[in-house]
Length: 147
Image (cartoon, rainbow, N blue to C red; front, side, top):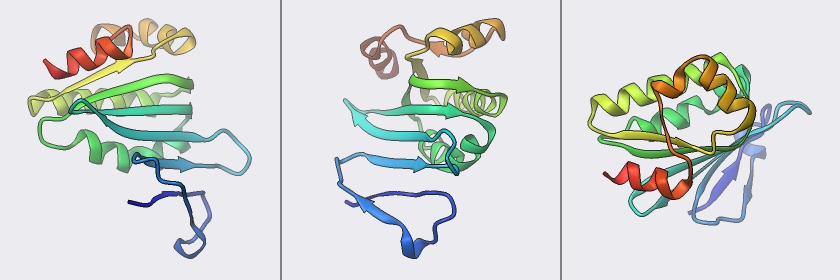
């Protein structure tokens, strides 16, 4: 399996491969601004999505198709790790809420972990910590996703 990094503005002919670690990587750079990186890996039968960077409107639009493909699988068991996220916007929150609802309807689970600092404050102020399933550690998130 070969993993690719896509940078905004590149054509398929000038995309470049990176070393394959066994995980798929969606990495998008935006003309000198923050990047959002989404790493996907399977851990004990659970799909773990590690986000890092800023989840601004532009970055969310870039990763949303890959994100929905993962959480839209039948009976998804997904852990979303936000420990590397430094900013979150309304489109990201909407994407996460839709994913949670979709997974629930199909008998799956979406569990969030790594929610700290500003991200935790935003989720709490919007009362989303009462709607989204948030685990305090990766181990706890994996355990909840499996049950």
